[in-house]
View 1 (cartoon, each protein chain N blue to C red):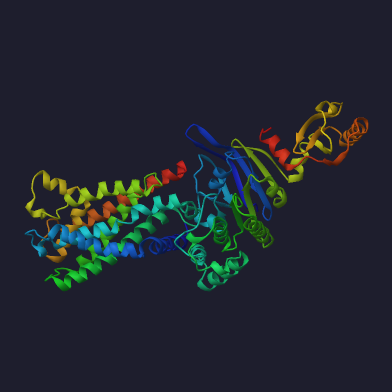
View 2: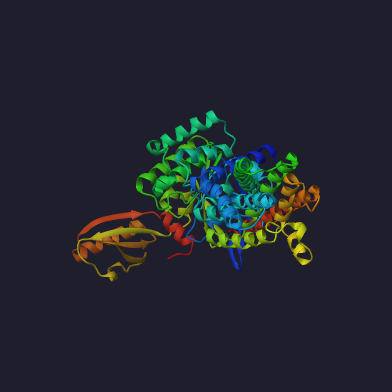
Length: 305
Length: 248
């Protein structure tokens, strides 16, 4: 059974269509990434999947349970970290977790045991009895995650979980996502961080302007744009752009202290660059070929430059 | 629908509200001081019969305490961004509305019983009908906690907007509810005006319970309070449902 099956979701706010006929299927067990630029419709879609927002049309099932027809049963199967959702500032870290656990009907002993385990895992042991209002953003986000996973949900939904976090908190969040996935939770996460999507996700859907523009594994998405291969070269001396003008090289741009040279055939391009260096008495400092990255696939798919 | 899940969600929301919004030193102190301030404002220095006006005072106090914090909960949670998390938990809109009402009602009853007990020790009060008194406390607190939840429903994440709305609705009700002039002494359009306020029926029910001198039959008072409660809950649910559709 699929963890999430959303079909033909639409949502408009006045004249603006935020989500336009979005259908996604999240298979059980994997890490599904929902990738898109700011304002693409990721959060609106997630809010409809989690029952926070009522769609204009379309349906959502979570492990076969319709979110809008039986929201209580559907929400029991989910742990959610909303994009802007935070925890109660006037409760302590452990009180927030225990209160959330009560919504899922966990008995007292299980609540306490699970809260202790998660607090330790997320490195919050020393602050467990402090009011959340005294916490940094990263610590609040960790509490938010603790609340989302307290009941070991079959489906974990995270909306931009690492945005604005410091390196330590970000690493903890990513480790926790991986741990939950290993423990059996299906994970659905939205992000505009391409590196994060590339390293975490087994399947990615790219959304742009409210529509799904591509779905597949990161490698498959990269492969969709096989022509966009390039060579990065750094010379010790300054070079003229016209040196790169040759058949097979489609474009060359300064790229930091290097040149990025887009080409049809990297092998030919490397040989040409070596020939240029020889001919012009230039010293090559570094030379690297690259296959298209997920970032480039993302830029292509979302119509960026 | 799974009723066990539904009832559990109501109870946890009630607990959440009590812990975060009601069981706070300043709120409790305000809850206890408020009746004293109202008493001093309206009774000291005036030639009013304390026993005669006590049901009105009791009704006014229950009205204010039960509806005091409720209007602020939803706007506050929207501002703090905890509302979205709450909605994503295993709850439905009805759980939130009823949980908010229950918390307000418990606070209203708790404070009112404390104040009533203190007054009963200091004043020569008599109770004509204990059952009616209990019903008046319960019905009144639920009705006006429901009013508080209704006032929390408009689209805003700014508690000060709701404070203004709340004051502009609640304060006029006090003056058209037979608190300062007994209903029996009113006639014509003034009597019609008082009949439009739900607080009138609570005050009348307290009169029936404490002095036995009520204008309406107790069942009429109770029926009106129950009907008004359903109206408040229904309208609050419709508005909050519309907010969910609009995404606000």
